[in-house]
Length: 357
Image (cartoon, rainbow, N blue to C red; front, side, top):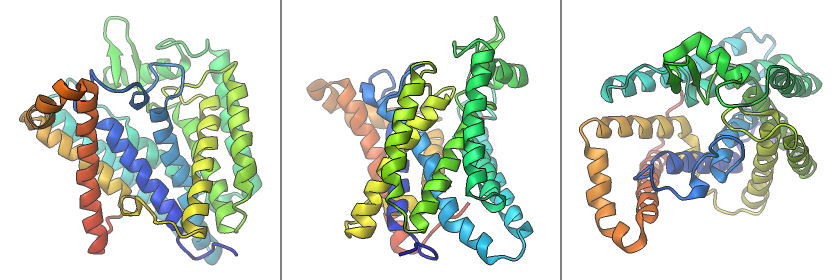
């Protein structure tokens, strides 16, 4: 049976669980005491935490296939759809810039950082949305392949993936200098994990999600059974010459994480849509951007007067750290943040409040 015209609870649930995971890894009580699986790889490698952002972008692509493509098929002209995609992308980017402005002002940071997670989501949504409107399946596959292959060739031809010396970091440092996530004024070198060139393979991740969503919508969910292991195998094989690297979003990393995202999508669809399991996390999923942005703003507002640190030290660490260790206390605080926002979005869902960006 085709999925045209209906919403998949599995996609909302998977999006929601991904956002919950974002909040979990972004809000430890103590950054100096975090369990290894909840940390990003220092450079090369892929931890469970490194799966979170590509999962979200993959689901952005799935949602484009389920929500935008039916509108394209029903419309005689695409200009209005193009405008809608552009406006929404600008809103997401603008929200990201606004959050970074708040962080800069409230936390008295040394500089304003233009790049960020929401900014990348907005750019990927824009590129993948326009591709879904104007390109057929073969064109979308070709774009994803060209982005991954071209990016890998660019890295190889310009010196590889060494920190700060790779072409991605050099371009970002030349464009934005001290406004990057990390910048060394003495050497002029810098790095941003959501920089310009590394957004290109992230767009490919989103396009792979578009194709997965198209299968789901057409009732061809079994295609994921083929795609997932092929992407995992291809990503692993590619990593032997181009290592997994979330900071640079290497092509091997894009394929590897897309394979795991497709596996998660397949499992969620079978269990929730086909077998009737509860759509755990759906309330997070239908207010995903709002929850992410709201939690970030809460962090900035409470950190500025020292209340965030006090809540951790006096509320959890003072009694749990001596008993279970500082890592356990740090994790407990992150879980408390997730639980708080889970309650907020659940209340919003019960009252029918959906904030669309």
